[in-house]
Image (tube, rainbow, N blue to C red; front, side, top):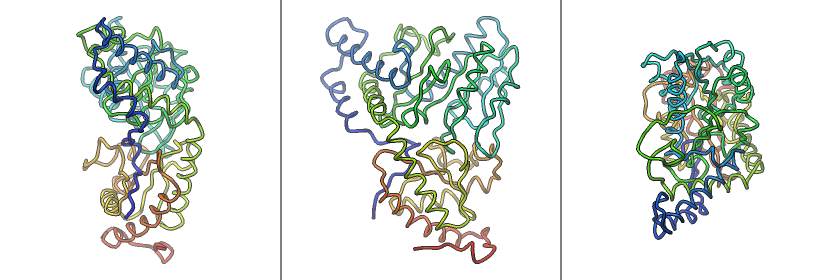
Length: 398
């Protein structure tokens, strides 16, 4: 049985070069970057080198990069920090976000809502893409922040971030984007996008878990979430995770080197997978197929199956995939992303996600295409809800 990993949106394997870069800072190079002796200064130099690499990847100044524990902290820092900074100036509080945000951002704005902040959740239609006009119409004089993700983690749809950032800039409103799924997969340049803040995470681009970064454009008002020290230019206190930061820096360097060639390769594999599914598994629907999407992500609804059963059955065949966001695994609730684009609960629970990355090749895609029709046929046979309408709806299994 082959082993095929098609869940790179959940996490990615650590690149060998990243591991090698990290190793010295897990053993002999153990200094605290705040110490003034040689051990500390070597650690500080390693952090600053990594900061430069991350800055190059997203087109920022090194001084605008704040290291964090990952995408969730970066989102929370941006959302809470911007709103609290605006509140400190006496501004009334209102936040605009979308209905399909990752829980790291979604739950942050809902927490603000519980504290009395007004929140507008901009709707998203079947395309899975936000209309910038809806964002513009939601703006109020008291709007303190707009936060819209760059690419959706479940659908792979790429949002019109540049247009929304332009609207925010014209109104003098800080704009944050959760780019955790975008960075390293498609070109991301903060100057071109015009964003005020941008979140990224190392483990989504073949780096280590537990480290990420927040880009904060120079001059953007942001109140720190924590107190306790002067680390990260007073924006994020706490002794730095030197080895993790070094790993993020190396992962950023590798991602920049791969460039658009890897995106093109992954798009070819994704298209091969989608063509095969549509040909060999009638009753399969590619969600947001005609929308701008990440080259690595496909969301598929199979009529008459349970997505969780599909994932378990695929796992037994050595193939990893997902029903959606990894942080929601095991939840009995239908995906908020899929219901937001108009799916019923049953349709949402019949949807699975395949996400590709380094190491995947055509042979792995072809193996998955051998297995998928078998799994779908078996699950449909067991489902009391599935009633094929005619012979053409039967599966063709090679």
